[in-house]
Length: 307
Image (cartoon, rainbow, N blue to C red; front, side, top):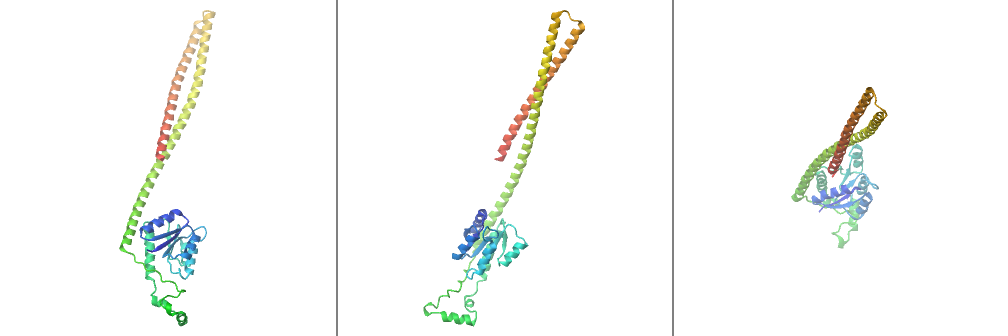
């Protein structure tokens, strides 16, 4: 089973890549940064390295440069990851001899397809064993002088072991197809959920605006009701004063008809204004109560929408 080393400082990216490649039948090892990747490469030999370009210590470019500079690892495919793939990133990836750059987040089965293609290409580039043993006459003479009779079948310790030959089975391809279908379905559900969330947010914002308007209306109604209460109290006081005046006039003697008519007219007007103020006060108090209650209802609906 091919071994894949994944280096990324984002836990979510590591987990997504692990799930996708494990579903494709690959063995995955995770490290959290470039330093951990280099430490792992000292003792291990992966069949492919997947490294993020930007990491807190060693970058993906550094990891790739390290791999290309070591004889036992130099043929290992390196696929870099980046949230932005532009001309500068492509230039640096080419400079460190990476096998390519894949954009994050991964789209559909793009990661599985790129990894499988690089493994297949690595398999095709495996040199023939006989050709690897013949380079120059001087090297041939040195190699022959170093051969000991008991160890004629062993390769030279200084020679790198031949890369493994991988066979991508129909079962693995089917697994990749299933993973791609699952990823596509998940993306569709995610997009649908995003649209639903956006609609709910719009409804919540609209309700919040209506709540603020109702609260403002309730505050205005309350302030107006208070003003009416003050005016009503003043009108009642004037009515009482007029009643006292009429009672005093009656006690002191027979008032003139004109004076009584004027007092009665003023008393009638004050009573009418008082009755009107009482009616307005009742209407404002009712409006304020209704607005406050509606604001409470909308607030409860908004809270439910957020859940």
